[in-house]
Amino acid sequence: MKMIMDNLRNTARIGSGAVLLLLFNLSATIAQQTFQYNQYMDNLTPFNPAWSLLDDAGSVNALVHSQWAGIEGAPSTLLLNGSLPLRKIRAAAGVILVHDEIGAENQTELNAFIAKAIKLSESSFLSTSVSAGFRSYKADYSQLDASDPEFRDNISETVGTIGLGVMMYNPDKYYIGISLPRMSIRSLGKSSAEDKRYQKNIWYFSGGYLYSLGTDFKIKPAVLLAYTPNMDMLTNVSATLYVKDRLGAGLNYQSNKEMAGILSYLFSNSVRIGYSYQFGFGSGNLGSISNGTHEVTLGLRFGQGLLPKLL
Image (tube, rainbow, N blue to C red; front, side):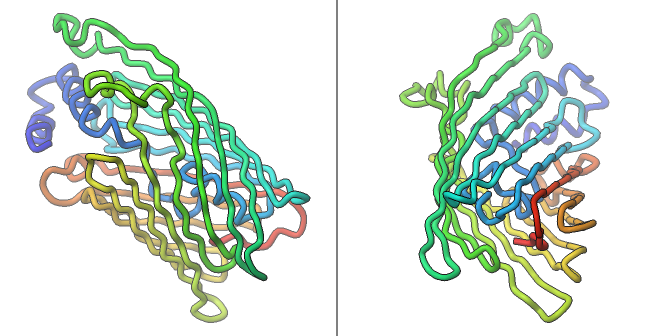
């Protein structure tokens, strides 16, 4: 990683083709980690669809994530997800679409899910979710260095995926869950050489709590842990302060030496917009030599008698 950082600092000398090659080397280092985004605390469904049952309204969410702005070929993500409540059976169904790009590589995932809850007590529930879909992966390696036999062959593959999620929650106070949202069927049993072309299975542990500080203020700490066997765990911790159930201001910290400031606003109980700016610090972090990471979100809720959705 340090060597990649040193080379990226000299991009003015080495040219755009070399930058793409370096980003490919970087993507090989982090390829086994799926996409991450700063405002997970407001839309956890892509990581654990069982979370969709915290809200009894229908919803549509969109996110645009531009990482390491100013570096050619840097990662970018487009996320769309939506769900519909099935109130008679205390369930929800929905879809999740994610498109990622980094350098010469791009990946599109589409999953459909269904989640079902059971009542544990007057205010506590246990929900589970199952999902299924596909992942399409394409890599145009020839644009990196056409003369290098390592990058002679492009790749275009589609694999099936399945996912599972479990969550315990009180819709007004807390949630805690574990999930395996995108398990590539073809990744099972792959050798180390073959496995480079498939994401390993990533387990997510999530939790959040909404605490009232009086009539006008609430605070929501949240955590998201990503665990992949034989890799360092990625820890994502945040805290958001809400004012009059409308304005949210928060901070986010990731264990890969990234921090973000987050602002969100609920125009009504049915429309939420959010923005975050993430920056890196310390040596060995691309965020410290770029123009930061920008993220914009839009959330829409629909249904009758909507109440503010903060958790």
